[in-house]
Image (cartoon, rainbow, N blue to C red; front, side, top):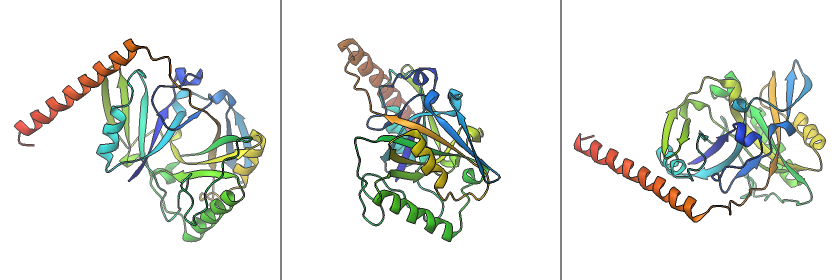
Length: 270
């Protein structure tokens, strides 16, 4: 099974501070450099950032796991210096037969080619009631999307793309020092959610905006897109021996708590 783990933004990430987890993955520049495209009654308008941190994603990574429980456990064991962070775990895949793609290639076997002289941009499709309910677009709409994705990769524009299922099957992992808590979906604040993404490469934000406006989105009515510039991950070489030891203690506490819970469950016959 494939899952997308989204690092929810906060004041720290909006200042450009990268968390020590989410590696490998894609980190995004603060929303002061972002643009939201609103399609209303067939007309496009632009709103420039910054945007409220609670509505934002700071980064994301796609991961394979055997089950929802397994991916939650993986995320709980990420570095814990990111106190206060919230990681949202979503089932990857869109309703219908829309096929995701990344550096592994498209359904037709085309491998995206990264051009270092171009900037990577992420186009987020913001959620609405239809996407949260996993509404299935007509087959002919899905066919057009798949064809457009394939063409975009062949033209050297698209690098990745994937839909996300509604949050009924989602979870959020909250970090607080050595403690983690898990909150199950669905999440009611639809305006804060993401329904899917594309990663493209372009010479400028204006060029990325033009591509985003031209895409054949499955929704016939109003939509909201968010364009963010991707940036390279910072290597956290500043970890001191003391920090490494502290993280080891945190992980030991988590392991001890997990074993206590397992033994308690076994004693109850659960």
